[in-house]
Length: 517
Image (cartoon, rainbow, N blue to C red; front, side, top):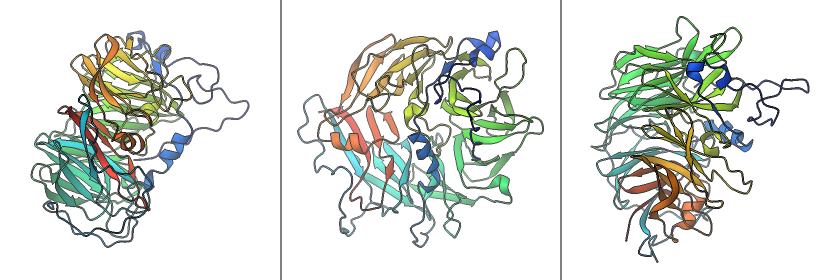
């Protein structure tokens, strides 16, 4: 997608940023105070992200790169069944050693685990592991040049589908009948582009239609693209436009371009229960943003929403950032000139403001301090939504803590804090999934103690352990598994965020915990 404008230069006489931004300057009027009274409630303005996160984001083009100089593989077809292969010479490992028996020494109340090893010859640079999909007792993930399925019960490899080049984007969800569309890089000379689409039937373990995206001008370049699926539609967002195709057969459906009024053009996409487009709008003075729902069959705009000043009624210079949840719709917004001055709002199903969240004394980091790394609007840890409650991981007040140490629950109807979780020292806390009126959360492992999954009730209070992890897998969990995570069918899944081909030795790409022995 198109890149944001650089932040303005700030000299000694420049106006100070918000007290919640990285400048630590004096406060200014909040976003909530500039919204109409009926839209106001209050606003959650979050804390600064550390400067190191900027470096992570700047390396996006190298992630998942296909620069190993190998000949392109054949086009994807039916899945390859697992087979024995010659064992290559093992380089010196740089990560945690993989245990021969990951369940050795388990206590009665500890969850059984399995892990899946990476079997591809990866390039030297870091390779991004993508979204997890669950279909018919399988957990499936794209990594580098393959889409691979493992049995949820025990981690046995079920099938893998090779691709001609490295995968560069995946949607967060498949269709209801188990199909996805992935994007991969040009297998020819244009290594920097992400211009090929491939449909894959996850139930059959077979490849379907393929399509190369046309690039006729600067507005439709494919340096970065993002995919979203709603119903039988996949929306491909790239730079300043978005194209929709039928997932089943690749038939073109509609195109979204710059709107005739307002100068708004697609910047990112989100899917699932609704198909959403996040626009950038190029005004005379400021860059603003809007979010809109699109009919997945026709491309008709069902509604649009922009932040407006309560007094002047003018659109405010704020953009829409991450979509924490599509239904209910919870999204972050940030100032156009200062992405670290950000807030979280909830919208109704018809695109009206439901509430603006008020964090009170609590501070928060964007995506729980994990950075962005060029992923799409829906790839953001630290926030989970239930029907009427939104759970957000806090920024720790302890400088020695590595990540968020509490979870705050917000009422989506009022924007007010309902409860905050009880901290457990410096243990990191991340919300995983809403379960009825309760929350399942991940208490991350540390060098001297494995992690666990806990349940926090509708009124907060002490957490109850649901899955207690064993010590044998502790080094693997703590040192390697910092990528996508999910809870599905009573099992918890963790992925390795970045895998390297440089003398890395054997690396686990997926770790799962299930029922206790």
